[in-house]
Image (cartoon, rainbow, N blue to C red; front, top):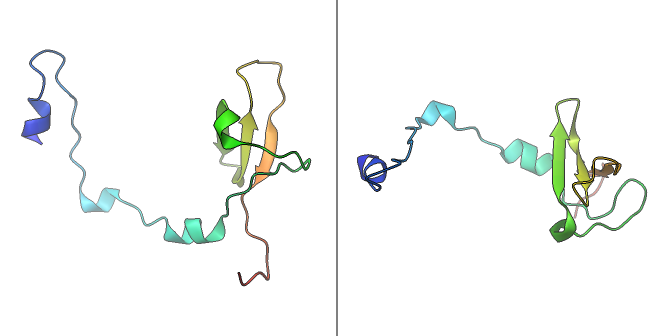
Length: 88
């Protein structure tokens, strides 16, 4: 930790020591989600072209994306929830 703190003479790095109780196991969350490249409106999305991503507390299994920084552009919805009954 001190090695990183002292790596710069000016503008020293701010280092936060993490202890084991600060880490969370996200495996159950990862197992419940999948990567999709199609919006709810059936529009194919290339993630490299996305400028803004948003996930909200009220819809944690949905990703909202915008393809520009234009305030007038409507966000597109992508469901990350796995389909029920699939074994593959």
